[in-house]
Amino acid sequence: MQRAPLPLTVWIHAMLRKNALVSVLLCAVMAGSLAACSEQEQSAVQTSEAVPDPALVTVIAVKPETVILADELPGRVAAFRTAEIRPQVGGIIEKRLYEQGSEVKAGQQLFQIGAATFKAELDSAAAALQRTEAGLVRSQAKFDRAKKLLDSVAISLEAYDDAVADLAAAKANVAEARATVQRRQLEVEFATVRAPINGRIGQALVSEGALVSASGATPLAIIQQIDQVYVDVRQPASQIDVIREAAESGQLEDASKIPVVILGASGKPYPTTGRALFSEVSVDPGTGNVTVRVEVKNPDRLLLPGMYVRARLPRGVLHDALLVPQEALVRDAAGKPQLVIVNQDKTAARRAVDIGATVNGRTIVTSGLEAGESVVVQGQDRVQDGAIVDPKPFTPLVASAKN
Image (cartoon, rainbow, N blue to C red; front, side, top):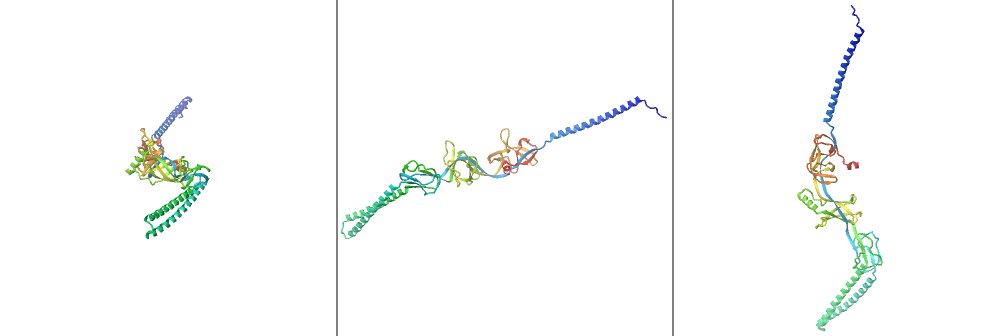
């Protein structure tokens, strides 16, 4: 038997109910998918917040070094030798025999004083010498005759004594006349003024035609020997005690044989070094400083007397010192120095340290640090204590600039 066909209205209602059920199922599936995606995203966000990326830092491995400790102190350049040229006889300056500002040698003629008067006095002294020598010949002859006559008792003993006295007086007169000749000869030589030392001579302080004397207050010129110079450095007296105590305790090695570096006013070192000679035994009561004299070779005449310079005066040699760049140091709330150390597992840890002097931009760590440890130089502000870091080697600016 064949079924009777459903009415059109009934078929339409059945299809609508079927589509509604499918829609409900599709919505349920989509809602479940969205919920799963939301849970995955939230889990990913929580995971990213819990494990941040390691902080990028630059580190340096600390190695023991031998360090020369030095104090940079002010000083003044002084000539090695200074000679004021003064006349030894009086007279009129006839000539200047040197070029002002030039290098002169010992014995070189500098000035010529009028010598006519001295030459005349020399001739007069020579004539007097001849006269006394003639008198000596006569006295010697009288003495010889008196001695022969005394043996034959032809003269008295008194006459013989007179002959002896006349001979002695004649010899004394000759000696005096010769001394006078030598004196007059020196005056003639002193009329030519010569350089007593090698060095650079300055301007002439007198001109031709000037009347000079041996007792005059003004020198004719000044010669300064500057092929080597002195640098007088002023050092605090308190620093001397610190150096002495450190040397006695064995912390520092004696630095007396280490060259002294001389710096110009701009801070640039000169191409020559010096050596410390001695320090004064008295302290300046006004400044509390003592003067240390440094001898410096100056072949190019770059250092001139009176120049202001600075000297790196060594005060000791420290062996097995641990140094870190200054930028590696951080301070805690109390202002005490700290370092950030990177451990083998790449975790960072802040550590309190004791520091000493700073040498060429690096600070000596006296305690709290071991050789071979890695110290953070840059990036400490991004590091928490115990956090994992990404260490990279530190390259100093000076080294990078050279490369």
